[in-house]
Image (cartoon, rainbow, N blue to C red; front, side, top):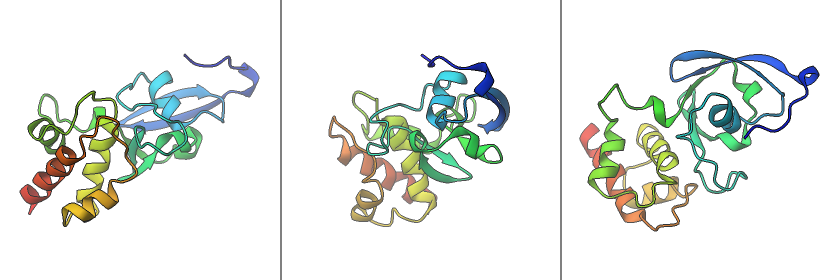
Length: 163
């Protein structure tokens, strides 16, 4: 639920999320995470620790993964923001989404969107050349269910499929 807002303190901003520009009127202190979840209804991105320590809120900004709980929405008006909702192409899952299913890289699923966003970035960045490297570069994403082996297998399978 959005906190009480003082209309005098609201600013107009536009965010380009998953290829669509959306207009918002928010307090300048609203995090990108809260803008996505509470104001745009994109609830795939999860609020975990809200301190940048768990990675549940990972999104891509201009192709780079960030913890959206640590970023202000107003700072990203000129950026391309991708959330978990923006990965699939219609009914076709992104290969990383499918790999998480195939390799049981999810259990309760709460961390899964952030894990998938980090997995996609990890492969794209070239930081999935080995399981050890994948574990290191995915270490900012915490899974309380302990699905780390399945997550590493999923990232490895996507990296191998992409050559």
